[in-house]
Length: 401
Image (cartoon, rainbow, N blue to C red; front, side, top):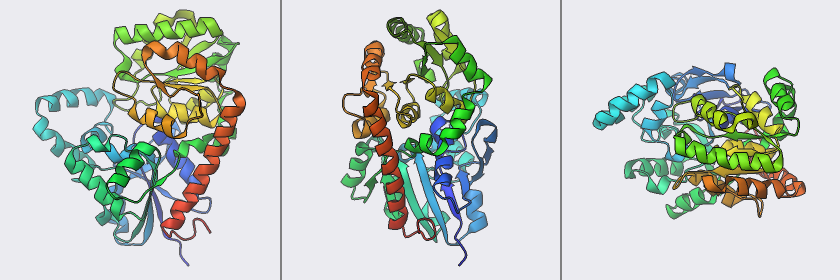
């Protein structure tokens, strides 16, 4: 019996930490399958540890009505609209002028976005059923915390797409509640990244011997924290507040600060922001410039803990049983808070404001290692079981037999 093709679909077409990880994890869970990786656009991110990604529309033309498996793997895709999705496919240099242009002419923004992604979808990272009419469709560990606040057209489209899917697994209780209120059947599953240490531990440990990480380890012989903040933390007052809190923690705990980027796509992280923060921190800090997926994982894995705005910085630290803390500006951090409330160990802080970084990190560092290790094992076990259950629910053959 010929095996049906399997397409892994997600935002693998841009440089973002979690999105680079997802297809690696799904592929490792499909050992007898060679899946195709699809995004909204054809991109080659192998230089950063990612994949060669095909455009979903092009794959639909190629595969037509053939039976296949379409698995949406991870990400906050349920509330990602066409405009941000299309913008994040651009280079950083191009994104600024585009934002300026369409801020002046917002009525043309949607048409431009749909032209970029080749589809009229409001929520393009949820595949339209008509693209692959004979597909078995699965959503595995996706998020949509702000779906209730989305434009009605986007929300209606997402719910219709989910209703047509064969199995839906979402990664937090907030998203699950949104879908249940709309009558959508869904399962609660962890984020795929909880498996990163178990599946790729050897690869990550090899990358810890790279010169860039070895230099960080030499510079901070007593250890360091892996710290990341997205570009929207880049105003002077915010950086001053972060620097004050990290300096307090560094002085009391004797730890260095390794600053890194968890994504280089537009609206993600900015090197200049980290350089300015490092300047404020002085000898306490070093900027880690590598954007390679396994280098970033290795930096976190070799640290004493993670602090920052990245959800997947937190989840990778969780997989390695390390202390972790998310930081949010006022009114932000919803997906990080939803994850922590759903899965985090009792007593371990979830999301804090800038003024509480030092106290939050102190609490996280004082959580017993055995508590963190137990949770890491439990989440990895849970995702494996839930992944298999989703494929069984969708009646996808040959993947779980």
